Length: 198
Image (cartoon, rainbow, N blue to C red; front, side, top):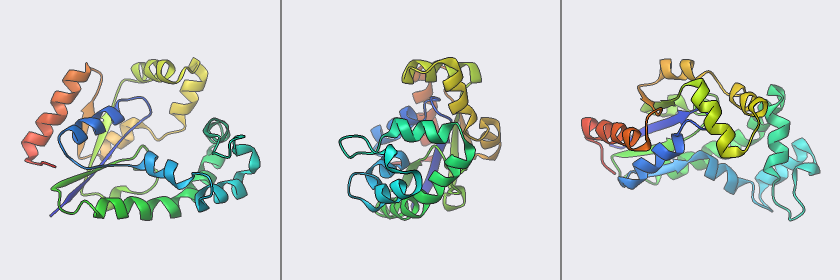
């Protein structure tokens, strides 16, 4: 039987790095952000739906989704983020489930989803793993990674659900405040302790 693990955490806490640790161990990983990007390429129903909802200004000159423009709309206004999720959810969930079911021969399949809780995916998972980091380190990492000033980074973090709430609901919590090597060791230990393999 395949176990579905929902992996989540706030922006810039190291969630994608941990997803890569799983992939390095031949554990299949379904990346919800990657699926979402594929659903809004030019000519797709997803991009058409977003244009209908938010207007043509979210499309770049080359016909692709202007993620920066859309991000500016949704990260500053919770109501706009709700609108975005309402458009994308009916497209995203069926495709995520299709990809996870395709890996039925694996003992463990990871869903890497930054909005695992917000999107309501938790009941679909067998286990949840939340990556946590101190607020100061998260802010520092986000500013460095995305070139944001402190206010913009803080607003982006504030647009997500509380990390402490997610951690309190998780089956497994991974603190990524140490080095990458230390964090990797925690993931490998969890895999070893649970006897999961790809």
